[in-house]
Image 1 (cartoon, rainbow, N blue to C red):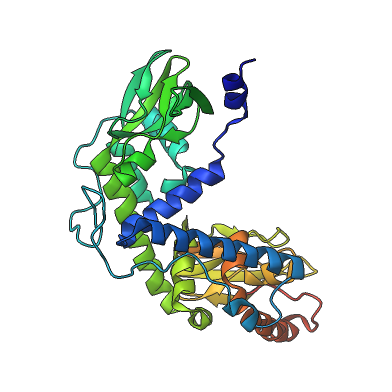
Image 2: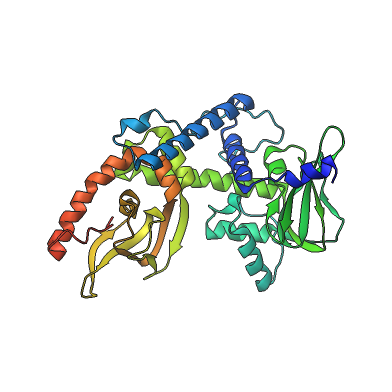
Length: 383
């Protein structure tokens, strides 16, 4: 095997790297700082400190007091003063009064829409979109049949489209200064590519070649930027407003609230849907954005007893994360409900300063259960 082939075999672009670069890119385009290098240094330095904080917290169980977390900074605060970007065709979502939906809708069959929805729902840049925004993404995409050997994008070309793979095998190559091609990633019937060149408005960083016949879904540059950037902007503004009405979160610093807004993911439920099931492991906590949820505990006799009702601005699910025990209560939607979900990793990374408040609430919850069950043996996660 040649040296070039050995290098190609070793190279691979992990999903974590792509997600980190996308997070940095979206933050940069929203903030539009005057110096991208200074911004990058600050961003990744604070990201490193934030991850170090999470590791320390995991090894120690949790922070012993709020001051332990006060020196740990997170990635830069969003919505700093807006300054002109160094790149052409800047897009400022704050100044865009148009809707983020597509100006052109490409017709699709029901089967095509379902397949495309399944393909895009787990893509990092779309994971925080609400159902209407996700429909805009699907409407805006058009299909492109490809054949083995086709170059989908070429390194150095201008970015025109973002692509989602429906079927087929595709290979990503990077050409080094000596002209050698290195295989850096292989896509097998799933995945997406082409987003960074569109977000940055920079030349393609790699060549994507079809290894087999296949089908791609593509989205135009301008529609892609409007949907991704404007939806990210609206999401952060919306969650900033939600965070402001949650008393516990008022203890967070401004940049901590901003980073929490970035990490929240919307979830939707219909009447009587089970949101949390008693006994399940804790995978995250929830903030009520719209609607009402009911908290029920199953007694030793099998009877379900309502112990709490939570409305907008309330939260639940945090005690399983604090105590590292299973869910001790079930939570059901009353009517249509919209929640903001924070997964366990983000919880440990971002809510360290709130840990003491949550621990103090445990005693209040125990007292509630004493009144209901006559003992503390069923201490529950009832917020």
